[in-house]
Image (cartoon, rainbow, N blue to C red):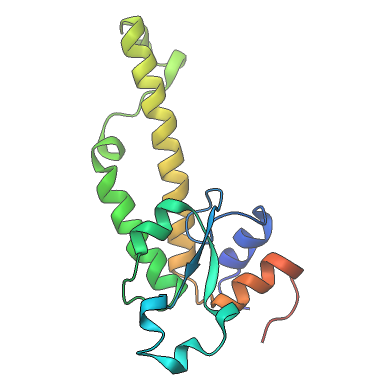
Length: 155
């Protein structure tokens, strides 16, 4: 198996997690968008081979873009997520109570900083997940098989 990281990531995650970012999945994403299936019939042979679990943000962001593989879709999502949170990701990293500058902040600002750091950690985790998936050669069939059956030989 190539890119064991992507396979391990999917195996260790919950069954209903987004294939792209690892957040809880709420929807199914058509890897070949439904609006493209009439135009590209060879890619749309089996409906089950076209859909993967996805969170709402990833599914809505991808919409009907002409990206037909999981890695390409994950790469696009990573760029969009980074751009969305660029200010937060490039801002100062606070270390909470261990950081002497943190104690100089007023209480209402401390709450804001703590919330931003939680969001930052979540975004960084999602970006790491997207990076692993985007550098893999994972197919829809492999992703769905791994979610159902665990680590077995996949052809």
